[in-house]
Length: 236
Image (cartoon, rainbow, N blue to C red; front, side, top):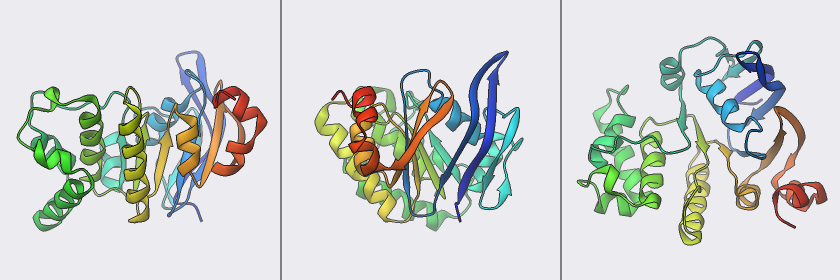
């Protein structure tokens, strides 16, 4: 049984339809990648799950509960955390304060400290920079902080939008290694990523989105070997 499901959702921006009958599922132990060109509807899909957009038709189901119409702050409290494209940090706040903001809805001090230690284990650079203002970090460090802040909510599902965007290749490799580690520790991940090769390499399953429609699905390895995917997204 899937932990998170989208069932035939349609989403509009005014009169423009952004998603058409989109259905996808994320299991409890999975990394699922959503790939496609710019404007395909990938970010809209994540925003719909987060409650920032509401589908005109269809439903979002999380752990057996209907999320359609649930406000975004309640979606976070239920356990779905979204690290958006562009990171959206608090640049004039310290690294440590940005991390604590991820735990704003929690009251368990011991658990918060445990998760802070976990973030610092995954990203030692953040511990080194803990008193530095977030806006003064490098791009790679800011991406680490965005992921770390989401982990501080102790998510049941972690959604990431373009985590490798603008990063040097060595940092891209690091970020994807950490995502696999986070998943191995029990957190399912829904990943939107322009670097389709890296996304498919770590994904258990993946979906290809074109102009608001799911046009292909399969395991990450199946899509890596697909001639259509190679030509359209992998530069082969």
